[in-house]
Length: 338
Image (cartoon, rainbow, N blue to C red):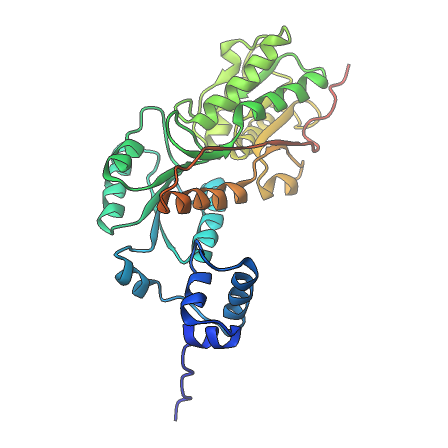
């Protein structure tokens, strides 16, 4: 005979072990517990975890009229930055009793339109937008429909967002290269319609300009955010009559592509050409020549975007958050030789 299935742990079981009423246990396990002391909330949640209790999200949705789903729009989940942020979003949403539905938009307005319609047809409760561009209307449409939303990683004026202070991050990269004595530098700028590309580039270029070393436009290359884009832009920089002694790439994947271009030009990263990336992905520290990078707290971005949505679902107005960037120095930015 097949082994008997164990019965699922019920809310009443958790309440009995915690020695509280069932309604108290239910409130303690909700995403925004009210009328329950913090010690009780902690005790109930710890017991629920030990006992293996799982909230019946579907049943909760039927009672409240909500789907208990958060939609997440990303350009591509193959982008390691967005994948890391989404992992944090999903964990934070799950802890609050929500599921997530992710949609790849390919950074294309028409594709985004179709994906957003599909999410709204599922009656999602809120949306996190990770692919915003200048001129996007997705946030305005969601606002008109009364669907709470927040931007993550990228920003748009007038819309709530959780991101890194990218202008300051670009400035940190510039100050580091200036301190090392680099004056002829190149920038791989990413997409200038995305705030990440625009603000990082702007902070970098303005810092060099203020120091008396304005960067000529030929040394500032617009691109996508992929490794092949970095290789193409890096090749263009290395083919200049006077190639840069240092390159700032506004994404670690762009820096990875630039590494190949520097190699193909017969130069060595970290010896002949300094290189700085952005986001400090795990791969940055493990490359054959470990990459100097500007660190973004990707996990905090994801979790705080969920926190902002939960506040919005409770009737509060979410406020934008700018997380501080951090310069992480490794082997790709040595002091130039005389």
